[in-house]
Length: 316
Length: 296
Image (cartoon, rainbow over all chains, first blue to last red; front, side, top):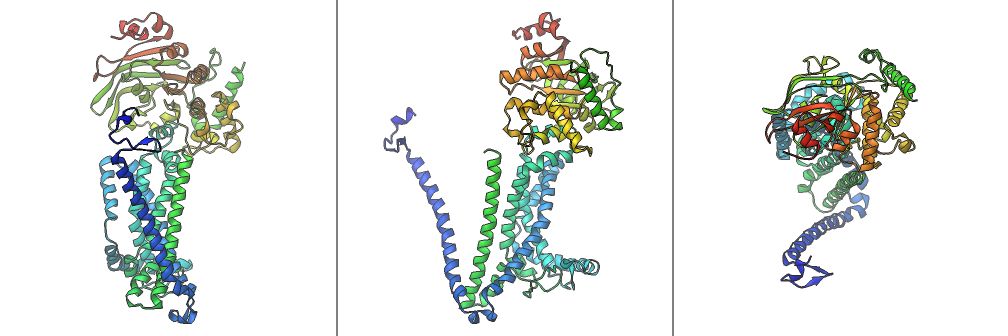
């Protein structure tokens, strides 16, 4: 403080000495922050203004003469369903892999498994799409046939099973693989930070390794896993290429995961329709985009809320 | 006065624990003064403790008396905590850590190949330097944490009884009885440490290891723990590592002195004897220098 009074920059703002470097840095940082806000507001403004004609247009002018909500509903349904499948599969798997690498595997193996899982995130989504339609889809056919035969009474597997494997189930599986690395990385980081003292306390009480994990590691990582899952969910909701390639679309709203009659997703539908659209059709597609934007925003805000609640609870 | 009552309670807990655990108890000797429950003795024989290739503690042979408090003193890095952690097989949790020699708990080698470390730790409990109650659990759940392990099935009323008894035993009941369902993180450091003691004693171990249990606490909380230690030895064998010489003098029956020749050498147990003798008339000059505050 005393040294500051002999600064080469005697100008003072609100009683504090400010160095040129500090001012430059804070200016840059503020500008970057504002840019983000401007971009976000710009995107929202664009979506709303471009979607507006579709929202206000008479039903007869819309594609197929359907009301906008009727057009969007199957897409929202397909988007949420495929993401739900992905989350249901990916979260337990990510937790298991994260626990394996943070607490169970020997050091060398843990490092290489973590590396490989991270590598999954580096695969472009178009590659996932091609792999899904060329490999996983055909491979799924015998399984879905069997499911339709034996578990057809469950609405999810009502069948008739698709012969190409371009089903909601396969799309969900591929999405699960794509979001696995995000969830896994978040979970692993937090599991590794579980305080040593707590882990030792549990073990000193005579806990087995699994009991220790259940008692200490999982509660400690719970909200981080939830937040990571939300991030993954955000990606799954917006994922375009893989779903566009894999899913065979009919627009049906159904929980039947293994047939060739599937609802599309918002993002895949935009990708498929946009090049051939003009006029009001474009506005309709942008309106669906607005809905997707709202859904992902809600998911991300939920993730934020979970993280901040956790921070409040742990007193940070 | 509370002698017979507590004895009875201990027997009740044993009965609840089921026949398998009950048979592991030695027959109690009610004639022994100041002892509510006969705890087990520990004999370490030619114990060498390693971190990888590094020999951290060399050739310790010691008898730790049941229902007594044994304090381990010595400068930092001399291996006393390492030795302590080898007594309930916590040492081996560190990568590459291992021991040679044997540690006998009432004659049973805890390092025998067939011995399950989980069973060892159920009999040899531990309290750590930092008070570390489980942050996501309430005071009640913390105390009962060990009771829920290893598929033990206890009725709610039984758990309630053990929780109250353990918290009373840790001199904490009166302070927390109205907020058992509140998070343990809201307690003061001293209360948290007593909660950790309640948690460790709830599963009725034979031996209680304490690794500098007061070094994170203020003097008043420290005295409260020392009082507690003095009472706990009626039911448990206690081994405590401490940097506080007054604490060793006040709270222990026996004191062992660990030392290293120079940095990088293995630690050794130079001398162990009755606390009074160690602090008034130790055999070795090194011990005398250490306890009187003169260092080589």
